Length: 144
Image (cartoon, rainbow, N blue to C red; front, side, top):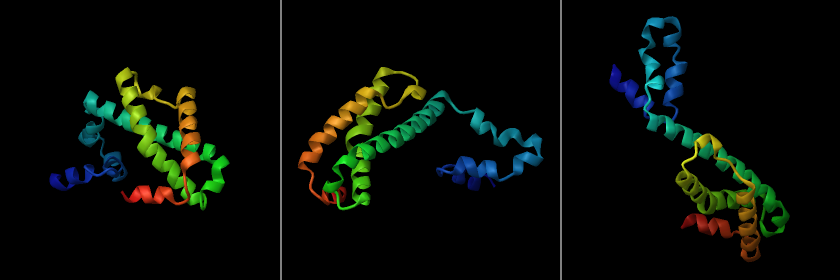
């Protein structure tokens, strides 16, 4: 019975799994299944908004970093290394700092986006970083 269903919903795709089961469509009386969505606490809702905003931010800033790094293409063996480096920079140098600063501001998560100030700071960091970067360095960093 219930044990299996709650075990499923703890997975990341659990929410979609419940919706795609098609059980609530034919039986409106069983709206109890969807109440878990509406019955979320504020902190759960906030956490979901934070995750979505952070994922979007990661996507946007990674694109920005990859685009900026195109001018340093000769520093990388190939596009794959450039991409790995962009992901590493965002994951290790940018995202957590930005999330922490934004959290302290206390603004709503739907306003969390890449600003021109952030863009400028990241570009300055990358300019300095690329002066010292040697091919394959990102792969050595990932192993640590």
